[in-house]
Amino acid sequence: MKACLLIKTEPGRHNDVAKAVSEMEGVKLAFPVLGRTDVVANVEVADLEALSRLVLKLLEVKGVAASETLVEAEV
Image 1 (cartoon, rainbow, N blue to C red):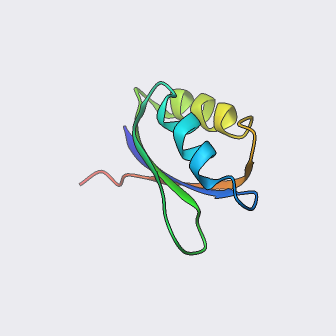
Image 2: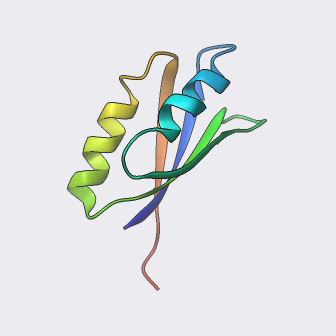
């Protein structure tokens, strides 16, 4: 399954968080952005359980303040 993670960081931590997230298993791409969200990550995992584990690991990354997960809709 594919998902997009919208990550809010502590001030000035967007580059560090993007680098740390990009090295996580299942993350295909992570990059800092301008706007309400500080980092966007595209992920691909086996199932919802794997996605949940990834998000919980993400929340442990130093500098992450909050996240929102957008799950790909099946067409």
